[in-house]
Image (cartoon, rainbow, N blue to C red):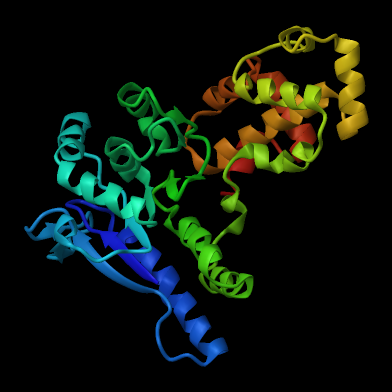
Length: 324
């Protein structure tokens, strides 16, 4: 299994080597339990320049140039780079056209292409995310939306995967990304042992807060499915049940009956749970203020939401955040 790690000027050293450490540990467990002496995962460091680069923590590296490499890779990972302001950042992402061509070719040949944190902009700039959903580091949400209007940004999701392109939002998400890649190539036992040895929080493997209610999608009720789609698209704004019913051309009474029959829950309770789950997720992965999070889950009244959150979760929102 051949992996390319792209070392760019200012890339985070923790991400550059952290993902590899996941594969190092996995290799050790594979050897232990299979008797095979060869490394299952092998990696190569590549760059987009022929100059020596320095990582964010000062490590100097000089590697082969990716766009001059004819080797086919199974996985390509681009770690985030240190952000030094919008102008400097935009110059960097606009200077990589030859690399983007190489990246596209590798993807067309079957490579899984991954990036985390600020490096998700390289995926967007290359065209690999065109007309797809993506995530990025939460504090660059405005810039991402401004530059890439044909990409649906869901920054509250830690990891999004589509058609062998994987975006991971945070600077430390390389650990969860590593486990996701392991799942594609090795047994669940090896994945579990690796996660346990490295104390990787597998709770953050969820790619969206909606997955916490994924059981609610396992049905064939078209009306309820339409309601669920509309709810998720409009979760960040305040709306009443009558608004939902009107949008999907039904009545409140019918909507309540269909939800109860299909999901054993009222639509109001379903919406509440989804709002709380999204708030929990944002409290875990972002540094957004509580007021901003409350706004993003469709509430205006901080006191009312805090009471709801405490009732559902058992502790207030800020106490919940301190656990992470």
